[in-house]
Amino acid sequence: MPNPEILIVGGMMPLVRDSLADSFATHDLPADDEAEILLNTVGDKIRGMASSPARRIDSELIDRLPELEIIANYGVGFDNVDVAHAAARNIIVTNTPDVLTEEVADSAIGLTIMTVRELSAAERWLRAGNWKKHYPLTRGTLRGKRMGIFGLGRIGRAIAQRAQAMGMEVCYHNRTRVRDVPYPYISSLRELATHCDILMCAAPGGEATRGLINAEIFQALGPEGTFINIGRGSTVDEAALVTALQDRTIMAAGLDVFENEPHVPPELLSMDHVVLLPHVASASVHTRNAMAQLLVDNLTNWFVNGSPLTPIAETPWTAA
Image (cartoon, rainbow, N blue to C red; front, side, top):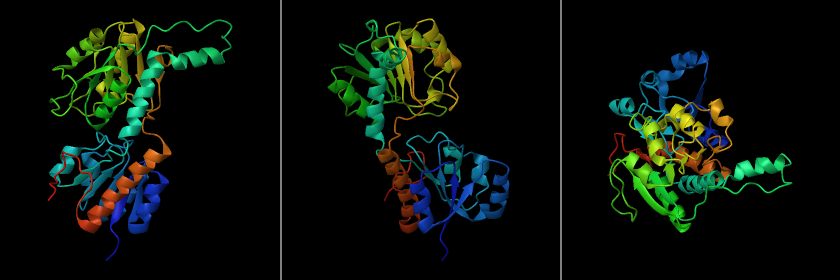
């Protein structure tokens, strides 16, 4: 029996390409007009997909693949995939959870410290030759502060553990209360912002969370508040964030994700009280290789054993 044919959509680490090539017949989907040629040639043979979050997997693409059984997405987020349409087609969607949790949580705390204590601004000040006098004392500190976490999933919990270990109080807001955690549950996002000094977004993307962090939330966070986002850029009204930073409605922001990556609003680039990272929270060789291996393992297990390893909750799969 010939090897199953896999469509690779978007940039992938060598580990993914090399491992899939050992067990499958693989095809790269071009990002230009040649995509049509490839889909016309092999679209009806494709049974699996390895997808990158940088490429949109929409209903049109899914329907060009009538034999598609599984979409293995690289990353814990999957808002790049039309999950509802995949489910309607009885197509499994998997992601790569857990293996990146600790790395992202480490990055979230690092970004928090950089932002609150102005460490990147202080480094730029030093490199500019200004250490003839002391860098100004920072208003921000983590001492006696409370972190409010929007999105207490795997990553949110890991962030909470680290924040608590550093002496911060922790509270959270989710769509539903998490029953097995010691942190106070706050019933609304606005109330969470009112209750905390540092608002940490670890929420997933998608239509359900699009633009929820808006001008009202920044107003509630207040002029001594700091906003950190390692979740998804789509959760934030970016124009409202720019305004809140310009007029000092909030004190500072640390951002690893943006609404229209890789494009960053020029207003953010010009501000010293904003720390900007190019979506690198999970970007170590160790963690990205673990994510890549899990993507491969999902495809392999599906075609060898008939089951995915990490299907998303919205996918049409119930474990035996």
